[in-house]
Length: 245
Ligand SMILES: NC(=O)c1ccc[n+]([C@@H]2O[C@H](COP(=O)([O-])OP(=O)(O)OC[C@H]3O[C@@H](n4cnc5c(N)ncnc54)[C@H](OP(=O)(O)O)[C@@H]3O)[C@@H](O)[C@H]2O)c1
Image (cartoon, rainbow, N blue to C red; front, side, top):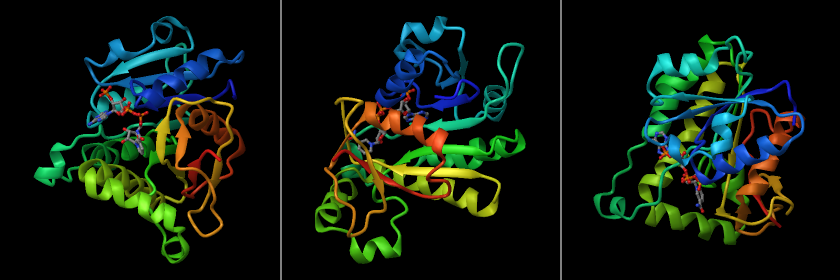
């Protein structure tokens, strides 16, 4: 983990976000991390994140441009943010199964506020979590293994809102990267998330006939992969599928 990095973490209060915080706290050379959290959600954060000097907390809504600008800016203790990590996502709910709600508040806020404020704040790297049904390329569609094709029908059918949200997150990040060639984006796609070990391997690849992995990904190994990707920059302007073997 690079101690020079200053991360803006979106989704810090989710399971994966909390795992990100734990792994950042455990490294000897801790990175700086700004946690951007909705007012009222901050009690979900690990207490150490509120007292550690490498961390700072900014409260706000994703549509609050001033709050995002503040979160990306440096201050007397922190340099400006160098990378945004989004572990945001929709909560599973069966209500949209009946209402057929496909609203996408997170993706809409990324498009209207977060990505434009990143650009005006000269922050050019974003790594964002999405779903296998997001940014599913024509090449992948031709050769995707049956196992994965069937797996992708489940959220489409049973979680229409969550699926739309996660897919749209990929769409808006890719769209921003198309308009702004300076944006170094990575959208990684995740299958079923588990509470398994961080030391299990992560297979990153395109979802074509060569992709062989399980349908599970431990959040701990996901976060370890994110920190590694920040260093390696192996998937800039790409949409890797991640899963454990
Ligand atoms: N579980 C799975 O098997 C699975 C599979 C594929 C994809 N996913 C997606 O992966 C995402 C990450 O998973 P996870 O389990 O680590 O996360 P999680 O525990 O579901 O946490 C979601 C995070 O997103 C934030 N959030 C949700 N709606 C928001 C909104 N409208 N505005 C601002 N913040 C919002 C939450 O903030 P608050 O604390 O303020 O609510 C929280 O920090 C999931 O949300 C899900 O959509 C999950």
